[in-house]
Length: 619
Image 1 (cartoon, rainbow, N blue to C red):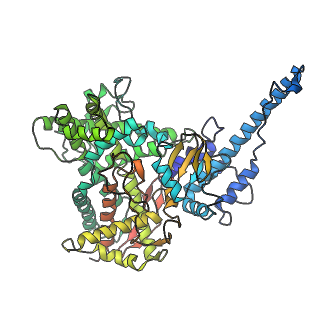
Image 2 (spheres, rainbow, N blue to C red; image 1 turned 90 degrees about the vertical axis):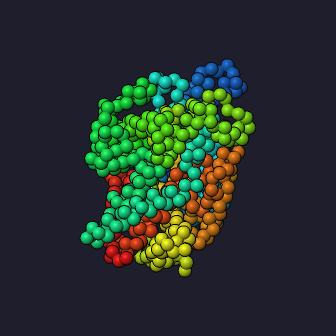
Image 3 (cartoon, rainbow, N blue to C red; image 1 turned 180 degrees about the horizontal axis):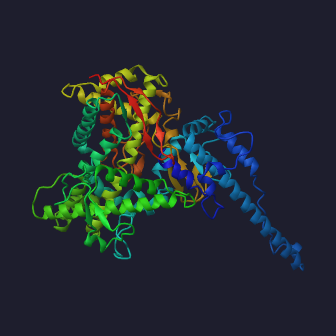
């Protein structure tokens, strides 16, 4: 479920002063006797109605007017009416808070346990009466395609700022370095901060890397396939192996943050995987370490665990009242500090090699360092022109150097790496689950979209003239599987402008908005036969909007929204789609795969921890 658990824990209502503990614990959610969210005879809306009936909103009182003629010469009457008004207003606010907490709790529990059933029920309501789900008090759910697209496009109305602070932990400490930026690009909608960083990062992560990414992902997937075939077993856990290993290889070889086997020599001179090392003196001058006193050269397990812990703290740890909160926060900070120290050491290593004219690998990290070197040496005229075209005027002197400081490179590499494992690992788990559902006949398949056809595509030889075409079709199988069985059902936004309109419903400033892209991908007004498996769907590709800052990007799909839409379209979507395509290819090549278990999630319902399949090992 990924972000769902965090969303469940982060609800507030307009009258609440603090996040509600009840929102994070299902047993504390107030629901009348006679039904619960686990009762198959009771739907989401019926459960909401029960809660609203149990917590009715009192009439909002009218404030007495001291100038009303009835109070002329009778100040005591006004004082009594004002006291009655104050008491009624307090009672109204209390009732509204109780209802908001209860409604939010039900929404959170359904999102965490039965999200697709809840969203389908909302989609099935008449659009004229429910364009969005907007309870009298509580968060809003946006589920129809046109409104989801608007929420994702209009970053001036619906922002990501709710989780910005935790996304920026890898930046320099402003107490030590007052001029430092304190943001990560994907955690802000501030144009002044976002657009310039966006251009820089999209110089380092581009659609032109398809061949490189395919080579990395295919080799990692084939290594897994060979090891699995030769293991002598007939069962493999997808979560713990290929769904984890291929994204980690992308982080290592494409982003430039390598992991190692224990004892394996690392790129850092004299150090091996698992070795401890002193914290960098130069980093300690600008960055405050709260939890660790020494660094580590990461093994693959270290790298995976750091990324997962940091991801969970940013996206899945929003309720201080939760008994897990402080432990997850501490683990997230520890992970951030280990990763930050390691990335800093890599930056210093490759800067030294670059200045000495030595050969360095081609990764996101080193591409940013090359841009930094070009700016410092006044060799960045093409980059400066890109910015001038974007802004309509030249950048202020020194601005590019600030955006390409060691601190910002460290933060951007950290943030990109954190998003590059947890999400793809979960996505690949659900893709495999969905393909098995297709095989088991749980989806109606178009003739061109059968499970057997996917197996045939996966087994196309690399030297086949149609190999590239087969890979592209497998990409569509992965996207279609993830449309039906997404790794996350909603993304979080906050409305920042009063009376923002969605489907003729006005939303107040400060309202938490659940943007249900999973529902949008099932909206029958846009997606024909939305519950069928069809890899031949028209993706409704559209160019990026927005003053040319995405003019070099590939068009984005309005049908497959798993990687977002608009400004916050996933920076690593090219790597992610190739990872899914190549991982699916390897899994299907095992031959005769069948389900041994269902997907098992962790205790907080954040991450898959196991999904075992059987296979026949036929070539």
